[in-house]
Image (cartoon, rainbow, N blue to C red):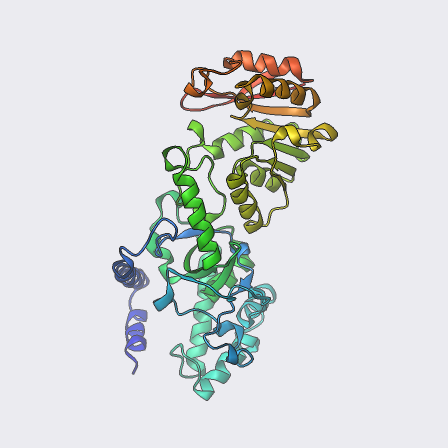
Length: 436
């Protein structure tokens, strides 16, 4: 008898709690062996291969299309066009493996789970059962299933897995994550445009998609070279800035390892404060000095039509690439805000000016353009973050204002008449809402 199958039979006879202990120890040992294998082989541009990411399962739409021998394209089904992660995990691979029209939802396993979960169809009447049984009888199935009884036992296990996830979900605490839990679960690859492509874990991914689970732990096997090159650019960009940190977090999960500063703020807390103080649930939003686009992503998720204005070419490149990777529709504009005709022609429900307007106080020319901008800027709500009055960069500025003076200046030059503090950072720095 196969050693793995023999061991499984022994474990299955143990009490349930003891089974979980044995299973977790096994996963821990596999994970430890893997960490030893990849130790010292990572860099900033290519994150830890053992890192666990939490993403929405709905992000995983397409199946990877990798073949070692392209001459076999017509002979190899999509479910088998995957990398060998035992050898390839953490690698960067060029090529066309990320170009695919085959959706995960087209796999017979997913369709069979739909029949089982949504219609109550018996496993024996599903495509999955029919296909696997046929492979078993022909000796071509690789998962240690020797006969139909083994297959039916496997299907009963899948039913129990469904009930476990339905009752408990993936309830791991994101802030206290035991990364090892995901080592034996869903695996993805990242394509050239930052898209997540399915690699392994078909049963679990099928279940969480159908049950509507919002977030699951995944691990990345392979990244496309073009995405890796973009990551290298972002890392270099961050290192060239103050303290080696990004100003804003990048919303794509593959960049959550990069530190950011956000000038003393927690961007999530700030976004929540802004959200609580919106006068409309939906509308149009203009972000002046959008940086990496964090707030445009969040506002679009609320249902707003957003415009991101970012003058710096390198920052804009990242902003636009991440917009595409996240499948967002907001418009990006690589110009100075003073050159954007949209400002003179449109009215916005919300305008963000977070830590940006003080740059226009440094010269007389910019100061005059700022006053002209404010005169033309039509909005119901302006969320404004002033600078620190005593910052070194403002030492020789044409004009400098305290927080109160800056707010009064804006009210005088816009068609707004009320101001209130809606957020205070730990440093004492404030964000204001200016409104009618």
